[in-house]
Image 1 (cartoon, rainbow, N blue to C red):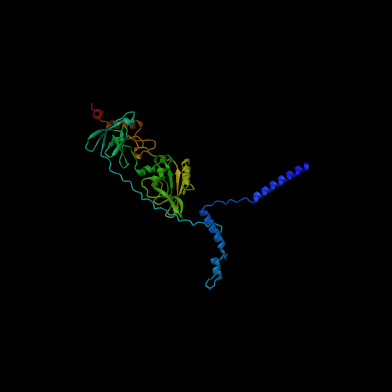
Image 2 (cartoon, rainbow, N blue to C red):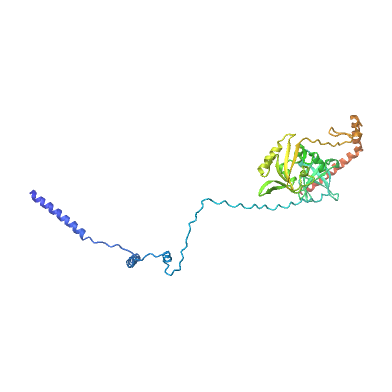
Length: 384
């Protein structure tokens, strides 16, 4: 019985193996579907590849080298050694621009007006000035109002200041005696810078700082136009046209001078100029300021000693002198202190002969000012 089951299992296994072998043997291959254009392109490529015949690779170089007709001449090429060092660029020539022409300031004629009176109080902005024109027509003016082409920028108790259209300022005083006693330009600088020799000077630093307050003011008034160059390098500051009555002339500078150094500090660069300025303003009295300049291709050294220069004070009354004023030989021991005082009183009484008349004049001025204010307020009052 067992022998029969073995035969059955073996038969079944053989049958299954035969079926699988037959299936693989007769399995149909399904062709892939392709678009007509792609199939045509592939067929053409295949056909071209099959029909192509092998050829030798020919180049133009081979044709030249073969030179069948003997017309080609070979050119020898030499290897050039390339430098890895970057060449230094050539220095461009410095072109100095032309200096701008300095235009001279033109002043216009002063206004023909007269200051008749001033109403002044504690607040200067509310002061009122009575001004008469060339036709003696009077008017009341407040701060900021215009008179012809000028604007009223200051009203003090004894004067007014006007700013003209071109920038110049004009001052009108209520009385001639109120005008300041100013020295002439050359006399003024004699009390600031005193020439002791051809190249040495005494300079009063306090008086100089009052007259020339800032470095910019000094550069403008001394006629310095900018840097001076030599071989493309800045060597200092050049002095152009100067005012004969201003600071440059007082300091001994001339036109076209070049300031090279100050106390050994070369001022070719802006930083060095500021350093020299800071060093000079910190020097005490008795110190020297040595300025090296180049004038007509010659080096000149100007020396300034910082020292006090006493300026004589002017006496407001005849017969009275200050301690800084030395009397003339004819006036020595001429009057004692009591006599000088009596002379001062007599001079004062002589200048004020009729005080009642002066008081009436002041009353008339006040009355006219008040009338002008009343008319002005009446004109500014809006209509009812």
